[in-house]
Image: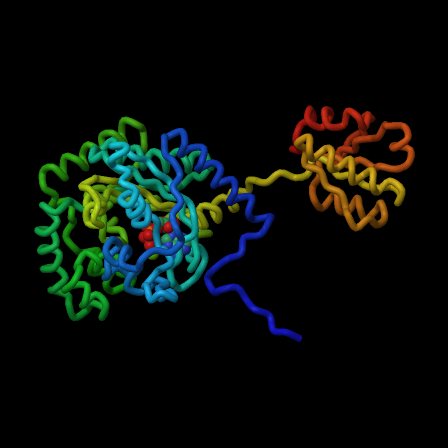
Length: 424
Ligand code: ATP
Ligand code: MG
C-alpha cells in the first residue's frame, strides 16, 4: 500500500462544515470595511525577504526566527509573508498611490506564515484580516481603525474582548526612553536569556516582548514609556483617548503593549479575548501607527495606522458561541422510482437556476436511504417525485422539522419555496 502523506505541520485544512464560520466572518468584515470606505488590496503571498527585514525588523522573532525564507530559481531571496502591513506599504509605494489620493484606506485578507510552535490558536499558516490607512497623522484616524475593529467584533457578537492601548512615542522621545530601559535591563543583564542579551545591544525594546518567563518579570518592572513621551506624543495619545471616550469605546491603558514589530510609532493597541478556548493565544488583533514605515521603505513621507486581526482565532471564538452558519438545502428531491430519476434531475437543475438550494441523491437507492440523506443535509423540505407526481403535476412538500405536508403544483414549486420561511 502507498504511504499516506500528511499536510504540513501547523497548517490546517478548512473543510465544509467549518468553512461557513470563516465565510461569515469574511463576509461581515467585507461589508463593514466598505461602510468605512476601505477598499480591498491583494498582494502576492511571497515578497522580497529584504522587505520584512527592513520593516518588521531583523531582531524581531518574526523575522529572526519565524520566517519561511527560500531562494527561487533565479537566486532571489523570497519569503512567505509573515504579516500584511509591509506588503501593503510596498504596493502603496510601488503604485505611487499617494499621487492619486492623499488619504488611502485599504483592507486585506489572506494567509500569513510564521514558523511557530503550534498549539490552539497558533499555527504556521494562519490568516489575517487587516486594515491600513495612509495619509492622516491625526488621532481621529487611530480612533477610526479601532472603531472598525470594535464594530466588527460587535457585529460578530463577540463579547468579552478588551482593548489595551499604549503609545510608543516617536523619534524625539523614544531614544531617551530607550536609554532608561537599557539602564534597567543592564542591572539585570545576567538574568536575561541569551537572545535578550543580544537584543539589549541591538534593539532593547524587543526585550519587553520576550516570551521567556524571567525576561518577562524583568520587563514587568521596567520603566513605563508613557512617562517619557514628548509633548506632541503626549497630546496625540490624550486626544486618542478623548475621542475614544466620545465614541463610547472602552479601553485600558497598558504601557506594556509593545507589539512584536519594529515599525510602530505613537499609538499601539491590542484586542484581547477572555475566552478559555484560546488559551495563551488570546490576542485576537493588534496594530498601531507607523508614521515612518512608508518613508523607510523608499516611499513618500506618509503617516499611517493599521491593524491586523487573527481570523483563525476569531473563528475559534465564534464557533464557541454556538451560532450556526451556512445555509442548508431548501429542498431535497427524493426519487420514488427509477423512471422518475431523469425528471428529478431536471427539476433540481431548473430550481437551482431559479436561485434555490436543492439536493438530490445522485446514487439513487431506496426511498428510505434518500430520506436519511435529506435528514443529514438538514434540508428544510423534501419532495418525493414518482410517477403519480409526474403525471398529475402535483406533489407534497414535507417540512423536515415536522408538521403537515403541503400540497404544491410542480410548476409553482420555485415560487412556493422562495416564499417559504427559512429553517429555524
Ligand atoms: P501573539 O502575541 O499571539 O504571538 P503577535 O503579536 O505575534 O501575536 P501580530 O503580528 O500582531 O501578532 O498579528 C496580529 C494577529 O494575528 C494576532 O493578534 C493574532 O490574532 C494573529 N496571529 C499572529 N500569529 C499567529 C499565529 N501563529 N497563528 C494564528 N494567529 C496568529
Ligand atoms: Mg507572535
